[in-house]
Length: 163
Image 1 (cartoon, one colour):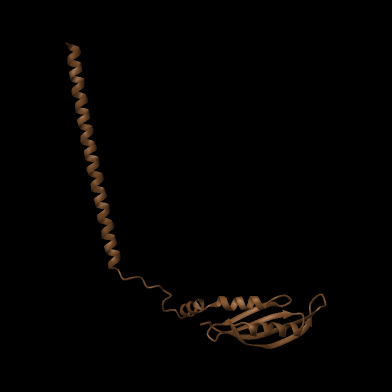
Image 2 (cartoon, one colour):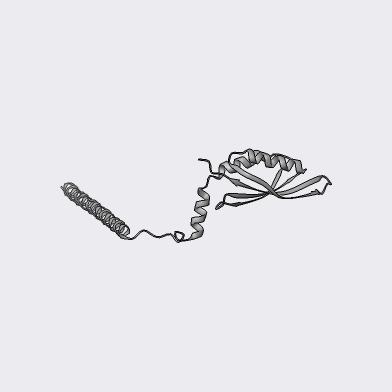
């Protein structure tokens, strides 16, 4: 009889433990759901707050340098650079490049073994569709460190935007 009483008491304790486990599990689920709802409300509140704010004004919007740089970057440089690359073959070596996008002018400093090679380079540039009005501004004939003849020259050209 004592065995049955202990068994009944053990089953009652087991039932109580099971009931407490289910109650705690239900409470944990309710807390998790409440936390999720609170997080969603906070996120929605923050989103509405951010939507109500005026968009930030970048510091560079009123900067004239930014507008000038943006305009220069929008220009089609690739055709001009390709024309220069195709015309610049050994024995011609470019040593300087200055551009003025506002006027479309390029100033090139180069070296060649002779004035004839420099003139051939100018002719090749004039034949390129992206370049026009190429002319030699100055030239200086000297020799390189090995004693070979060297012509340093500067030229100016105007690049044309292709339609």
